Length: 169
Image 1 (cartoon, rainbow, N blue to C red):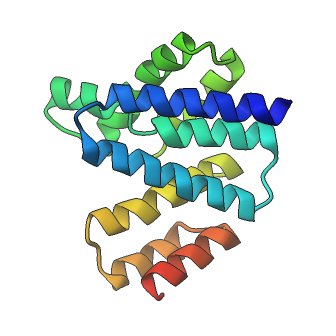
Image 2 (image 1 turned 60 degrees about the vertical axis):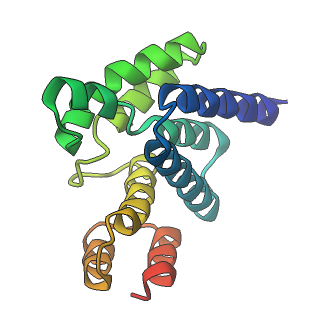
């Protein structure tokens, strides 16, 4: 029963993000791909259901600060996403009835997903790896860039396998 509630909640967040980014297929495609990689890495790493639920929600909303950042700063830079994203995520997730503890953790992840030092928690590490897997492709980065990212950022065995397989590094 708990698993069904988790799936329903993740689906509600997914649909809310579709509405949030309505008319912006690039942003929608991005969060869908980051979510898919985050879920696959979490599965490969044996992440437990509670933590995985929080991670998957964070993966769906991780770039929610972009819209506000583009209006407020005329930029989608990561530092602005981290600054503006938590409040937007809080608003959206509160409206969906998500538990406060989950919202707080998601907001932390949204507010740090472009900060790559001192990552000690598995959910944070997986979110960063999933975002990199997608950004490397979307930004048309070189194989050499992927190798540098793999060596510097990636820590999970599943994430390392994915980046090695995708980029041949």
